[in-house]
Length: 92
Image (cartoon, rainbow, N blue to C red; front, side, top):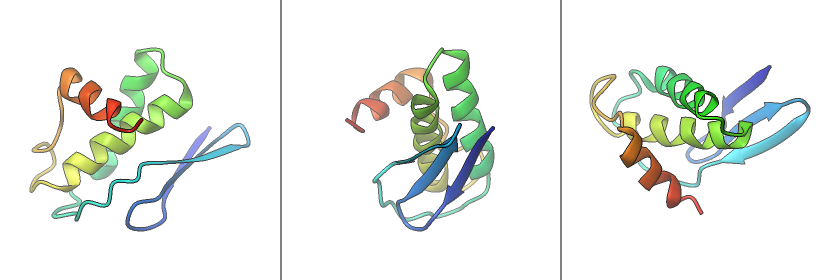
Protein backbone atom coordinates (compact mmCIF):
# COMPACT_ATOMS: atom_id res chain seq x y z
CA UNK A 1 0.00 0.00 0.00
CA UNK A 2 1.27 3.43 -0.93
CA UNK A 3 -0.23 6.53 0.64
CA UNK A 4 0.12 9.99 -0.88
CA UNK A 5 -0.77 13.35 0.56
CA UNK A 6 -0.11 16.91 -0.47
CA UNK A 7 0.84 19.16 2.41
CA UNK A 8 0.89 22.48 0.70
CA UNK A 9 2.82 24.52 -1.80
CA UNK A 10 5.77 22.24 -2.45
CA UNK A 11 5.75 19.30 -0.06
CA UNK A 12 4.37 15.92 -1.08
CA UNK A 13 4.50 12.98 1.29
CA UNK A 14 4.59 9.33 0.31
CA UNK A 15 4.52 6.35 2.62
CA UNK A 16 5.22 2.70 1.78
CA UNK A 17 5.91 -0.18 4.18
CA UNK A 18 6.40 2.20 7.12
CA UNK A 19 8.96 4.24 5.18
CA UNK A 20 7.98 7.88 4.75
CA UNK A 21 9.60 10.36 2.42
CA UNK A 22 8.95 13.65 0.68
CA UNK A 23 9.39 14.43 -2.98
CA UNK A 24 9.63 17.62 -4.91
CA UNK A 25 10.75 21.09 -4.09
CA UNK A 26 9.24 22.85 -7.06
CA UNK A 27 7.04 25.76 -6.03
CA UNK A 28 5.21 26.49 -9.28
CA UNK A 29 1.82 28.15 -9.15
CA UNK A 30 -1.02 25.79 -10.01
CA UNK A 31 -3.21 27.24 -12.75
CA UNK A 32 -5.64 24.33 -12.93
CA UNK A 33 -5.80 21.19 -10.80
CA UNK A 34 -7.95 19.26 -13.27
CA UNK A 35 -6.21 15.96 -13.95
CA UNK A 36 -3.53 16.30 -11.28
CA UNK A 37 -4.66 13.19 -9.40
CA UNK A 38 -4.67 11.21 -12.63
CA UNK A 39 -1.17 12.49 -13.38
CA UNK A 40 0.04 11.29 -9.97
CA UNK A 41 -1.31 7.81 -10.67
CA UNK A 42 0.05 7.80 -14.24
CA UNK A 43 3.53 8.82 -13.15
CA UNK A 44 3.59 6.31 -10.34
CA UNK A 45 2.37 3.43 -12.52
CA UNK A 46 4.83 4.35 -15.27
CA UNK A 47 7.62 4.13 -12.72
CA UNK A 48 6.43 0.72 -11.55
CA UNK A 49 6.31 -0.58 -15.12
CA UNK A 50 9.83 0.74 -15.72
CA UNK A 51 11.17 -1.03 -12.62
CA UNK A 52 11.68 2.07 -10.47
CA UNK A 53 11.88 2.01 -6.69
CA UNK A 54 8.90 3.35 -4.77
CA UNK A 55 10.83 6.62 -4.29
CA UNK A 56 11.53 6.76 -8.04
CA UNK A 57 7.83 6.19 -8.76
CA UNK A 58 6.94 8.99 -6.37
CA UNK A 59 9.40 11.34 -8.09
CA UNK A 60 7.82 10.62 -11.48
CA UNK A 61 4.35 11.13 -10.02
CA UNK A 62 5.39 14.50 -8.57
CA UNK A 63 6.92 15.66 -11.86
CA UNK A 64 3.83 14.82 -13.91
CA UNK A 65 1.45 16.31 -11.35
CA UNK A 66 3.46 19.52 -11.24
CA UNK A 67 3.47 19.92 -15.01
CA UNK A 68 -0.24 19.17 -15.38
CA UNK A 69 -1.13 21.75 -12.72
CA UNK A 70 0.71 24.52 -14.58
CA UNK A 71 -1.49 24.20 -17.69
CA UNK A 72 -5.20 24.46 -18.31
CA UNK A 73 -6.86 21.11 -18.96
CA UNK A 74 -6.25 17.56 -17.80
CA UNK A 75 -3.71 16.53 -20.45
CA UNK A 76 -2.01 19.74 -21.49
CA UNK A 77 0.98 19.33 -19.20
CA UNK A 78 1.64 15.63 -19.70
CA UNK A 79 5.22 14.85 -20.69
CA UNK A 80 6.61 12.21 -23.01
CA UNK A 81 9.20 9.81 -21.60
CA UNK A 82 12.14 11.92 -22.81
CA UNK A 83 10.84 15.14 -21.27
CA UNK A 84 10.00 13.23 -18.09
CA UNK A 85 13.58 11.90 -17.89
CA UNK A 86 14.96 15.41 -18.45
CA UNK A 87 12.77 16.85 -15.69
CA UNK A 88 13.71 14.03 -13.35
CA UNK A 89 17.41 14.72 -13.81
CA UNK A 90 16.76 18.21 -12.41
CA UNK A 91 15.60 16.73 -9.08
CA UNK A 92 19.13 15.70 -8.30
